[in-house]
Amino acid sequence: MNISVARSNGLFKEVTALAVPVALQSMLQSSFSIVDQIMIGQLGSVSIAGVGLAGKFSSIFSVVVAAVGAVAGIMISQYIGQRNDREVRRSFYVNLLLAVVVAALFMAVCILFPAKVMGLYTKDTSTRDVACGYLSIIALTFLPMAGATMLSTYLRCSGRPRLPLYASIVAAVLNTILNYILIFGTFGISPMGYRGAAIATVVSQVANFIIMMFLLPRGNVLGRRKVDTEISVCKFNVDQYLAMLLPVLVCEFMWSLGENVYAAIYGNIGTDASAAMTLTNPIQGIVIGALCGLSQAAGVLVGKRLGSGSYDEAYFASKRLMLYGAVGSVALSALVVVAAPLYVKIYNVDASVRLLTVQILFAYALVAPFKVLNMILGGGILRSGGKTKYVMGIDLFGTWLLGVPLGLLSAFVLRLPIPYVYFILSLEETARFAVSMVVFHRRRWMQRL
Image (cartoon, rainbow, N blue to C red; front, side, top):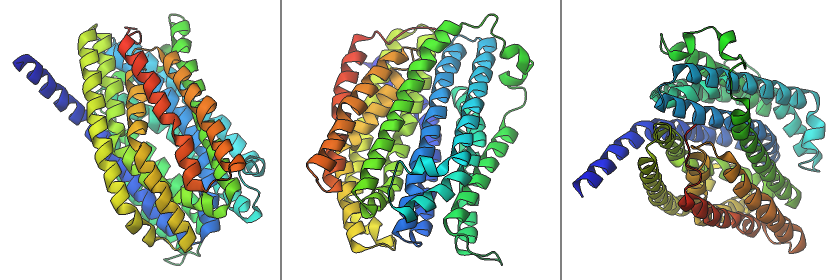
């Protein structure tokens, strides 16, 4: 009994040390996102909807580059557990190179073809024009985001999760200040509206990357060899790498594509529906952000235990992390229900949009615990052993066999209001969780690289 308690206490300290900085960083970004949303919200429903739809497409890049970061995290965590510095370096640089290539491709598409991209999301000309203008500028954030994602992954795996937090604090404050100046026009600068918001985001993302570079500790593992020797594939296990990477890329890309199908469904229901969904994003971001540290902790802590061959410890840590997530998500869902009617009052939108936003947030509160547990299971635990194909299969099943068909059915066949559409398509989270638990208990995901 005493051994079990000591083990639990030790794990809790490890989780806290890693998860809290990550959660604070994510919540900070979501909190400043609310400030951004309030500022953009003063420009009216068309600007809110346009920026929100452009953000949905740019989120595809965010998800894909995060997938590359996730694979890097799996590899770096396990190799740290094995005390293999050479493979830690190689894992970082190979994934950094891939992230930069992905960023360049997405940036080219957004700058060269914004009208074609956003035409898939909405038929409203005014909303589409706003979305195109915002997307073509925001694309400049992709390269610095790729670099910052990889640096954050390395720092968290190496036990320095506070450093990305410090960089994010500075970047978030800078973004908010620039938003106020550029959106509304102060200090002699003409009001730039939504374009000002996009420029502020670009500047803050570049600053985030530069600050993180300066915070990188001297004498770290990454700088001990020349870069060209680390990306050499002469002794690199390409088959193992692709077996991890491709399922994660397919999984995250298809999940993000599904989210964009959802956004297109909301956009085709109407501008009010799309604006209401956009207004819920910061609250959803805060809830997920508050607990995303558990997912990051799961990937790192479970991965290190698997890397050192401590399988029972890995399984015990996984169960504890899920318990923490369940308790935290239920508590936050209750807060969402209480705060929703007050939250919508800060926006300069029609009463109908406010009502829809409150109703969607109520629906979100019901499914949030399953979203959080799926994030911890799929995003952290099941991937930590490198068996990423399991998570790919679960996510494809949930999004494309359940979520998308349910969304199309409820929106365009049954013609239900958007709160019901959102709740019905979100039920796929419960099915995804059930399948994930079956895979978890079978333990086939537990392996050492």
